[in-house]
Length: 415
Image 1 (cartoon, rainbow, N blue to C red):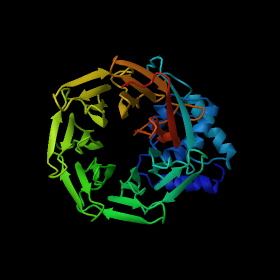
Image 2: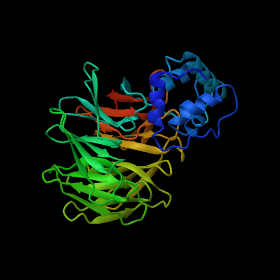
Image 3: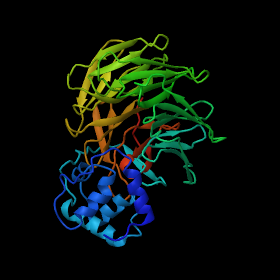
Image 4: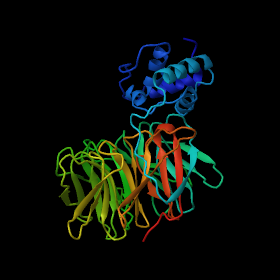
């Protein structure tokens, strides 16, 4: 092996901090295998390679270039990409079932500066700036969508932000998923204020959201808790979920100010009393259901992704009625993120390669879907999506460090 470049070594050392199993299990023998084990598997497991849709050598070069800089070791880069292209060429083993339709959309991508950071959860500020969390890079960043200018801000050690949200004053709040904190970043001063969890069992703040009273609500997936933070006092209250290992994940606030939570480990949705924090659990009918995220339509109905069974669901809090539709790509499509915009439901099928963006019209109960690009290839996963102020959609491809604006055109909206 030739001498590693400084940037290559820095990437390997950074990735070595991530708790993964860097074994070559599942990788076939061949020239370049040892390099792939030492370089690629320093960051992720082998199944992130074996479960891809495969690429040409040029495609593997583009994909690996979003993760680590091998430009100073071109011989090694060639051996790695040649090995990957030979043993993992383009395939359709996990291809989505794409549904044609009349709606039109376009994708505009930004590749964020720090390699391998797993950028995610973009959100638009009042001035149009787009903020994101770079979880593996331990940073948050912003994009000026008019100029494309980007800037990144390092966070306190081991924060590993899972998501970001914004308050009315323009401060950026993030969940310190690794160090058990909620953080507030003031863009005007660069000051970061940390709020530590009051219970050591509350290890992993996950998804945050503000209600209309500027109270911050958040989930803690593996700690099996939900929390409330009062920014005025810094006081945090935590409540444990009723069902063990229900893994609270996504969270949204309805028009009455009531938080609703998705259960990623159980077949439930949970309503939180905003005053007492009493939890009301709504059991979903199919036992193997798990729900990554949910959103709430203007009529108060709750839309959710049945990630465990590859379905889209709707719950009516007024009547208790629950209805589900099979996602186009089937039970292993693993729907993940979801957003309701102008009466249309948008979500993605993260279990497929490429990751598909799906549109569902409740009025006609029809689907349409598109493959999500990552530069010249299709690779990555949307883990959260949110609307912009003008009714478009912000998504990301965390595997390839891309933030993406989806512009909705044509007959894509309904009331």
